Image 1 (cartoon, rainbow, N blue to C red):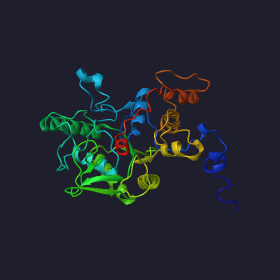
Image 2: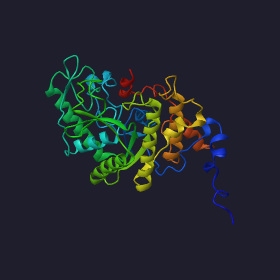
Image 3: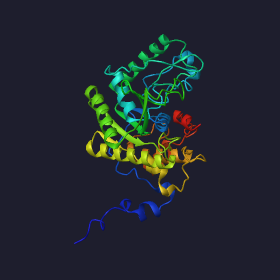
Image 4: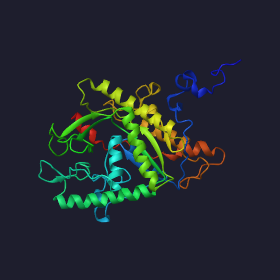
Length: 359
């Protein structure tokens, strides 16, 4: 009788799938459960790495679903003001708790007690989007008007998306002692003032992340039953840790927790949640460090290109014609995959608020 490993496909064996192939031929995206078409409305949220997905999809004719755009009069400064970094102007959503509360706020189910922070310039900043408005707002009224518009745009997003790509970035977070509201940054880093009696540090565990994600997905599918979730884990290392230990140990712990949580979610919710292995593509030993920059945390252009090439092969419909430059008939799949994300200029310029923690 043959044992199970004898007839297993080559991609299940380290020697064939990791050690022997050229770096660019290693592709752990095999078996991804969803195939996106250009008609699908794909929303993005999460840590800074999720920005790469939106830009690449948009650059090659896929629908990066954006519901919050800048007024034409200020379109020339839309980038610094966090428009179209993601599908709405929420900035980096680093943790599962942030994402859950964002969905709850958009649906009118949660209103944090913390309404506005002041900065060193005397202007007003949104505690849950402290960096999206450079220079802050001139008044609390202006801030709250913008916030109402923002949450309405998020609600529109939840109603209309087909897929949500959510990049799990961090387990470490700061929360309000009053109501558990999760901040994207520690108070006092970008705005506000840190108060150890009011601002609590938490390091989310696997079961908490799983519960958060399943809770926000249930809220979305209650109003949009066909919505699907694509999870990724950010390969960008922690800029700093609030734990009293070496940042390398904290980074390893956080990424392991996020990866296990993503696996559990995908296994428990087949057909609704899929995990795409961008983390493995960037950080796997097969890359020999070639997909990170000299700071050893930022992803290189080559790394972004490799992730997007795998996404094209494994998560998009290869039989759908490319409207930009249709491939030659003799090798349509290979040519389309090569062309799909060829324009990578500027893709590695993702805005990461978390880098401020390591300054």
